[in-house]
Length: 250
Image 1 (cartoon, rainbow, N blue to C red):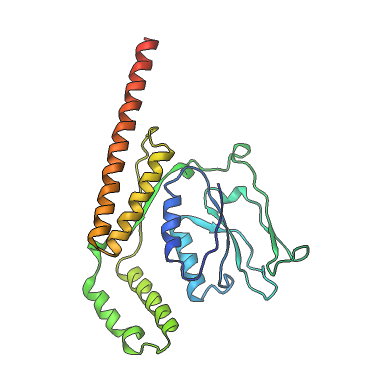
Image 2 (image 1 turned 90 degrees about the vertical axis):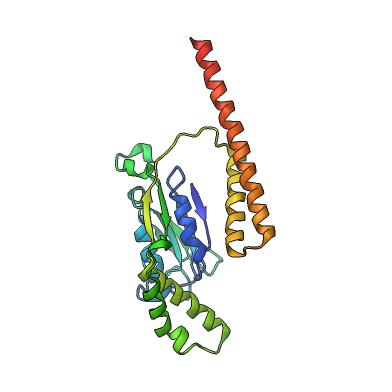
């Protein structure tokens, strides 16, 4: 699948987004216009993104050349390491577009025409932080010594940016991301309807964990019960149909 996404410099949700892609079947190609210069590897946000991509097994294919008329590599092509050999090096075309961004062209060689595609592309992973292993004492000590506490900026925008930067750095140090391969289960009854209810349930759970109001809690419980009910019904229907098919063929 090809996904087009604007990756904002404050990309807290992008980490979760990539983690969810690892649970899906197929080989994602993410086309994005980022708001920072990827050629500056030592800058905060490019460094964070490179580290995240490397950790999750993704690669960025666009050469570190200007993709914008004012300079800087802002437009990316991202895919998994097991698929990147099937994407030829993108070409940056400066002419022929009315946009302030240049055209980025690339060819994809279909997987069935190449033996380069590793079977590992079918593996699925869960990305998480094990909060139970958080070094709370060390976290609190480093937080107390951080610029956020010792000399916070007066400007609100700068303060929020420093808050995010400090939190991410301390989490990476004291509770780093982990990747765990998950067992693949064949669940043909997980159709579009059930997946949509599951997405709604997850959104409701995140909302409740963020703001633990009684209203959010009840909505999460309602969707959880609804998902379990539909899941059981569809699973039983599938089992009955399998048994009926076996009886007919027998």
